[in-house]
Image (cartoon, rainbow, N blue to C red; front, side):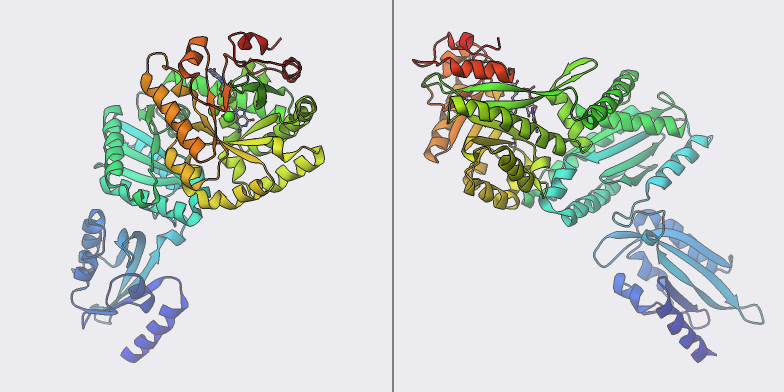
Length: 563
Ligand code: C2E
Ligand code: CA
Ligand code: CA
């Protein structure tokens, strides 16, 4: 009989995805299949003390449940076992397991065999296989159940989302991104308040249900986690600070049904993203109304894109050489006239990025800009056209192929083209882009580093990156009349860039007084309202035809007008 059982056990253990275990109640021997002991630090065979082996790997929060359910079998109080718990695998990660077991008795009714299966819940639909957190469906179900419970008098619903996660994936690879989520899940889990549970909702978004909690508790939890994350920063070696945005709606103040609370929390989270990320935003009526409006905007935006960019057009902002006062080039800026009037690109471009509209729109703008540019080159052969390209566009695999195709079709000289890339996360992982940069360099397309001074790595970035032009951000000009430090800084950046043969453009000079502060600095270009606001194509052509001579004079501003 024993031998038969042994053979049966082996045969079964090898024929299923689940782990089959067997306990001989008379000898007290527990047997686990090799596949299970390979994953978890358990012996293949354990005599009399199986619970002490499990104690070392079961999650402390789940231990009590695990222990009691097994003790009830051992004390012959129960016939069947069913328990879900987390256990630490050999890699040190907690994964969800489900154990089902049954007692078999001999003819006299004595416990003979206790046998069952352990399955990885990640293989089932309840648990997200990557993070081992309960999934979206479970979040929604628990939210619903909690709200129905009479004991629930208040609750905070939170959603947290990793900032710039898409870029992290693109820059560091998917596997790295997955690792970040896994680690974050474990970190959040480790500091979760009592009566709170964590879920993975989708992509880089996690949900937290905090029972018996209000806004103040949510705020404390969020800021404590922010501090904790900044302190231990597990991704320091990658030069990466992971930040989280969060949205929160509370029961009963904001809503009383699951559907409402879910939508409002999501709405608050989106607002946190729009307000600059790395923050927690609580739901308010006002937020909801704004959201409704922006949804309407999105619908209209999509409609216009579909209708061959109806309502879209370009403005060009002049770039002046301060030494000669000449109009050297222009930056193409996207404009969109919606039903509500002209919307700022700072507002609609992020929406286009988020909804995958920016890539095609960027190519459309590029084609328009080089078409216009060709006319200006006829008047001034070294005139440059600058086009903004976001990291999302640049990291598309086909980006260069599409860019070159348009250049060829429109017959535009590469020497007259400048691609502006924003200083951002992208430049931390320069190697990824290095090939594209070199390819562009071979064709004499210049690269400008936009918004310099607002990003992460600033000067250190220039060491490894083949940029041709640095555009100092307009924030440096803002207080220049009262702030000698900013003047010195602009001077210093210019000096360093020139030593490395990098050109410098200063953005945002609005007033004559501001120009006076920096006129001694040997900048290569200036771009600002003082010299000209963004204007239509024909205004650039007209200004180009008027030859500006004799250095920058205060009249320059008047010369480069949009009329
Ligand atoms: P940016 O690339 O830094 O463009 C310069 C922005 O600064 C423009 O705003 C311009 O109008 C503004 N500006 C220029 N001089 C001054 C000044 O003296 N004072 C002040 N206060 N502002 C000045 P705009 O046109 O609203 O564009 C905002 C941003 O939208 C751009 O910032 C750029 O990041 C993005 N953008 C615009 N067009 C495109 C596009 O075609 N593609 C992509 N990817 N992004 C674009
Ligand atoms: Ca720009
Ligand atoms: Ca800029």
